[in-house]
Amino acid sequence: MLKLEARPQPSKWMSLASPLLALAITVVIGVFLFWALGKDPAKGLQAFFVEPLKSAYALSELSVKAVPLVLIGLGLAVCFRSNVWNIGAEGQYVLGALAGGWVAMQAGPDTSRWIIVPILLAGVLGGMAWAAIAAWLRDKFNASEILVTLMLVYVAVQVLNWLVYGPWKDPDGYNFPQTVVFAASTKMPRLIDGLRANIGVLIALVAVAGAWVFLFRTRRGFALQVGGLAPAAARYAGFSSSAALWSALLISGGMAGLAGAMEAAGPLGQLTPYVPVGYGFAAIIVAYVGRLHPVGIVFSSILMSMFYIGGELAQSRLGMPKALTGVFQGLLLFALLACDTLINYRIRRVTGERA
Image 1 (cartoon, rainbow, N blue to C red):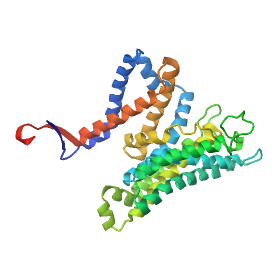
Image 2: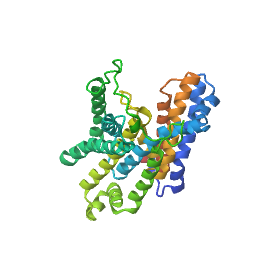
Image 3: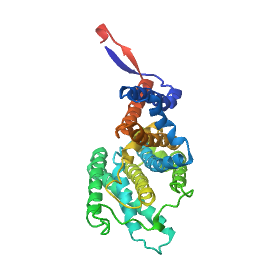
Image 4: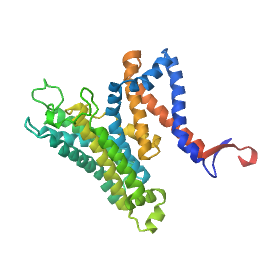
């Protein structure tokens, strides 16, 4: 009989190396997967790990996908460090896109470029409002934030569909479920002409620095982490569990909403039923692969963006199924969980009377 036994002192270095080991395992399994599907593994790995980095255009597209993952992942890291399980960042992302999109639709031909600021602020407030529903239900009725935030994702998607199929539908859009195309003044300014990389990259870097300062250099960040690691010690120190809950969910919801508003005012330029693309769920993997650390989240977001782009390239060039991106994301997560389990526990064989 096999049994997991906690290690007296897990290796700190192995814990840091665990994401790299999980990536290596994912690559090995990916090679066998390509081979089993009758595809050239070398071309498959090139699509995932070389093509997204080989040109300025590729790096620009990589940044477009990485920025929302960084922002949402930072918010989730704050939640998870606080022992608050926000699983519904996708819904907060959608509400941020709706709130920012509504502001963008108010713009006209003569609107100043400064309207970008209220668009982003509206996105933050929209995401925070959606997360506040879960915080209020957990605080007042002890409802599970896991279930509430997850179920609110589907409510947010239905609200989006109702708006783009109904009140917000473009009357000149040939009956397609979409809003009007936003005015040029509402678009996120691009960093380089001809490429889609925009100032969201700079905003994400500022957010990374801000998250690091908040978590490791402020009393509020310290209180949130103590509450997550040792609730009894937090209560003894006078830290409010209710304040920690609200702070964590509002920060996480605001970051997801900001990502949604930037997506609506950046690559999309209008609202359609295809606003939710799974960034909120992928960011959960991003947060854990990044070890819930702001700097680690940057690198894990880049990796996850490579999976998105690699999946699209494998689909178009190799005829692979669209679900391949999700397969690689899932493989990475399960490999990471397996590595972490073996870092913290060792397998012991128990026989005879001990069993």
